[in-house]
Structures are given as structure tokens and as C-alpha cells.
Length: 112
Image (cartoon, rainbow, N blue to C red):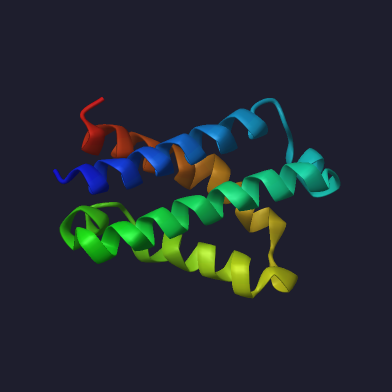
């Protein structure tokens, strides 16, 4: 694996861990009420999506091995360009259901 690819994968994993840390012990109601929590989560999803987009440019095979890679990039685009219509309940569901899958795949790709 190219060193640049590993860097993007590590950036994604770090951001995923940060989201997980912020969400741990929180409920959907907390997420809906705490703007700082939504901002922190959204920022880190933007980091994940941007890192994956950059990875795809230099290492398409690795990027496309990540489940729903195009949805992850799309989430980043939605957060940046369509921030006014974000459905926070969907984002919370992504944290609960999709984020663990992404973390597992990133660890496998990094050999952890």
C-alpha cells in the first residue's frame, strides 16, 4: 500500500474514533439538543468523506473496497453543500449502524 493511502485511511479511522468517542453514552435526544455534538460529528464525517475522496483519486482500488464508499463521499458533500437540510436522525443512525462497519474495514486495510 502506498504511504499516502495509509495516511488517508488513518485519518478516516481517527475521525471515526472521534465520532465514536463523542457519541458514546449519548442518545438521539442529546444529539438533537447539543449543537456542539452535531458540529463535532459533522466535522469528522466531513474529514472521513474528504479523506476517502482523496484516497479514491490516488488509490481507487483501496477506496472502492470500503463498503458504500460513494455514500460516504456523498455524506461529506451533503454536509458541506446541503447543510441546511441535514436530517440529524439519519446521521445518528449512521453513527450507530454504519460507523462500526467502516471502523472494522479501515482497521483491516491498515492491518490492525
